[in-house]
Each structure stands twice: as structure tokens, then as C-alpha cells.
Length: 106
Image 1: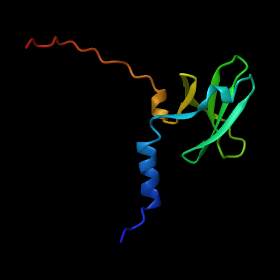
Image 2: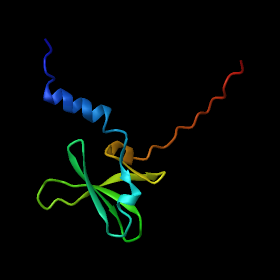
Image 3: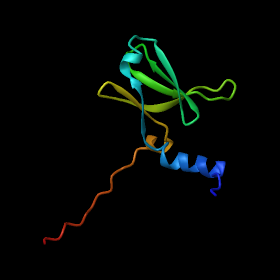
Image 4: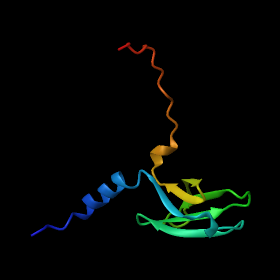
């Protein structure tokens, strides 16, 4: 007999394992013209993908709170496919560390 997973544990695992990567949404041909939009649900969150007036494709997280402004989400187009990343940690720039030591020869 198996025990059903705890809902909190399942949500935590989904957040750590799946939300931190890039996820395919649709092809760019789904929003060909300026002003076109596409709404998808990703991990229970509504995501709005829009082709802006400057022809850039941008994605927004639609907040459920009343009068909440849409929150920008990382969006990238690769090979005519739209990808989004919901992980907020990826928005921070990380400075590379300088290595001062030289490698030892073998």
C-alpha cells in the first residue's frame, strides 16, 4: 500500500526541481503580429506572453491580487520557440570570481 504524497511536499519539490529551469511555451508563430498575446498556465501560475509594439516578445506573471501589476518573467526565443524562466534568482547578475592561482602542470 502506498501513501499519497503530502501536498506541501509535492509543491516544494515542484518549485525546486522544475521551476528553476527554462520551459517551452509555444512557437513564435503563435503571436505573429504586434499586440498579439498568448496566455498559458505554468505550474499553476497564469503567464501572459505578448508581442510588444517594438516586435519584442515579453512574458509576464499575472498576479491574482486585485490591482496587481503584471510581474515580468525572463523570456527567450531560441530557434523560433518561446521559453520562459520563473525563477527569480536568475534575474540577479553574478560577478565571476577571479582566480589568482595558476594551474599546476601534470
